[in-house]
Image (cartoon, rainbow, N blue to C red):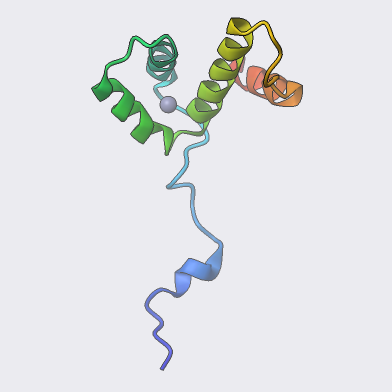
Length: 96
Ligand SMILES: [Zn+2]
C-alpha cells in the first residue's frame, strides 16, 4: 500500500546540493551582474546567469543588492528603500 521509494523527500535532511553558500567564480558573476544591470548583457549571458543564480546564494544576494542600490540611485524619489540590515549583512559577506 505504502510506496516507499521517495521517503527521503520528507527527511528535511538535504545536503547543500541545490544552493551553494559560496561562489567559486564570484568575480565572473559580479561582471555578469553589472552587465545585466547596466543592460549590456545579451540574451545568452542573461540565461546563463539565471541558471547560475538558482544555485549560487552569494550571487543571488549580490544581484538583489546591486539592483536595489542602482534603483535607489536612479530614482532620487524614495520608492523602495533597501532594508539596511540586508545591505549591511551582504556587504559584510562580500568584504570577507
Ligand atoms: Zn556565482
